[in-house]
Image (tube, rainbow, N blue to C red; front, side):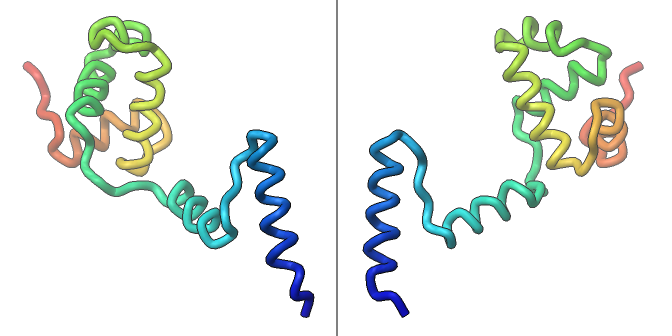
Length: 108
């Protein structure tokens, strides 16, 4: 076993940090990647519900952004979080799943 390996790893990490690169221990990187890969099953936030309500009303991302005074990129970020939490891949499925879960009731 090479006793210099931990020191070499540390030196590589310091050099990478000096270059502005992020440095994570393998155990931390593994946990972070598992968290990113595993969808969150948590409830939708109030803002995510607002975005989804506007999508359900037929609004585009641009229209939803204007209505909520946020950027279109922020709407897209909220939609990605909504998709992950609801286990769907698109806006129509997100709206359908929201109705299925009782998050919305049909407006008449």
